[in-house]
Each structure stands twice: as structure tokens, then as C-alpha cells.
Length: 223
Ligand code: C5P
Image (cartoon, rainbow, N blue to C red; front, side, top):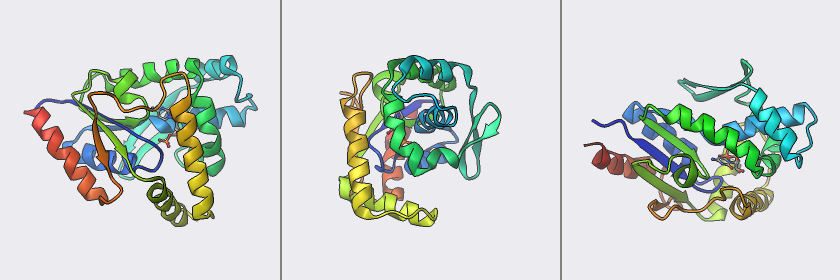
């Protein structure tokens, strides 16, 4: 069986990370959540009072901080300079600021280099916004996952409830639509479907159904 690269892109709440994790586990591949890396830079910038519109300062920060990923039974753990930040990079405050940080071309260059290094050996499932278009344009399997904004907000709402974060469906829908807008309209590698990516609408699919679809496609590429 060939150790391929699987790129999964799409907007917030499409189910990418949950599905990517299952696919990676079933194939015994490494799962790489690139959104967590942009979140780590955002978190570090907020901790150090670096202005979120200062691309040069954010790029310098991204260059000097050591971001490491570690697989675990609960999914991917992320560390900044050896300190675990898996949970704190997912707060609503970081979420609200991450698209602004990720829009800086310099920050993206640093992250993309790191992501390409992590994927070099193959046997990876990587999810994000620009994986098929910029990070792994040679990936054997490219998926663009999406769902209606109403469904994505509903999923985030349930997710927040389970994590004890208070939110309303309406505010989540607005926040998700705004993040989609920023990610799709930015100049530096915006969120778009790669011409050779397969579109997977998860609005009416369960997590297992979406994972099964990708696993079937992956098996066909691996023989
Ligand atoms: O996937 P997640 O929602 O955690 O991503 C957080 C943010 O990181 C996205 O909204 C986007 O601004 C940025 N991102 C990106 N490119 C990636 C992954 C994430 O710009 N490959």
C-alpha cells in the first residue's frame, strides 16, 4: 500500500478535523491540523501584545516560536516552545482573531514550510484552507469539504455546549460567515477549491459517512 498525502480543505465547521482524524486513524497515517498552527501564532501574539495588523512583527514571532505537534489518543496535541496549548488555542477570543493573523503572507510562508516538512514522508492527512492549492499541490487525494452555514453553526453550537462555552446559534452563524469571508477574500492563498479537488457536501452526511467516502477514495489511490 502506497503512503499517500491526503489534503482536506474547506470552511469552518465543515467537519474537516473530525473526519480527517478518523481517516488518519483508519489508514494509520499522521493527522496534521494546520488550523491549530495559525491559532498558535494568534495565541502567542495575543499573549505578547503583538499587534494583529503588524505582518512583519507576526512573521518574526512565527519564526522564533517552536511549534510542535504530537499525536495522542484524543487527537493532535500542539505545543509552543514545549508548553502544551491544545485547549487554549481554541477559545472564542483566538477564533475571532485567527483569520486576521492568517491573512499575512509572511506568517503563511513560515507555516507552509513547516507543514511541508511534516508531510514530506507521506502517509499524512492534512486539513486546512490552502492545503490542496499551496501546501501539498502534489497530494494524491484532494477533498474540498463544505456544508451550509446553518449546519456548520449548528455543529459548532453542539461542540461549544460540550466544551462548556456559552454561545447562541445566531452569533455563531455570523462569526462563521465572517471567518469564511475573511479566509476566502484574503490575497495570500485564499480558501478556494482546487480544480482537481473533489467536492464533498457534508450537510446531510454523518461523520462516519463522510469518513467512509474519503476512505474509499483513498484506497483507490493507494493500490
Ligand atoms: O481549521 P481552523 O478553524 O482551526 O482554522 C483557524 C483559522 O486558521 C482559519 O479560519 C483560517 O483563517 C486559518 N487557516 C488558514 N490556512 C490553513 C488553516 C487554517 O489560513 N491551512
